[in-house]
Length: 184
Image: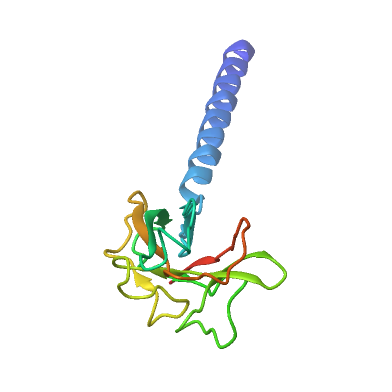
């Protein structure tokens, strides 16, 4: 009988342990708390532009014979602009590094220089040679034709001209540097 009681006690102990373990596991799972929240993700795309240029190279200017009464014109200069999507920009050209007295962003009086006191006047236009002077303020700059998409470069021709008859300019190699700005 002792063996039978021992087996019954052992069985009861095993059953009680199993039930208790199940209750603990079940109780733990049923009491587990859950909470949720959101994680915000953000980024900002700034308006930005990239500008590349192709120089205006006039070549030879002959103020005595060929260009005494005829301007030396050039349409080889280009400005290529790529801006972030949605940007509309105005492209501005400053007065140049050697501007004449009285030059302003609205009315640039540009000059190339070959040496001290050696200047050769020239003009840059936004629509055609001899057309509308391309300046350095919003009113005289060139507004891009459409909003950028982020992949569409806009190419603008720089129409340039050296006025005829600048016979006082001495022989030399004349240069100037104009700063191109995208204003948006």
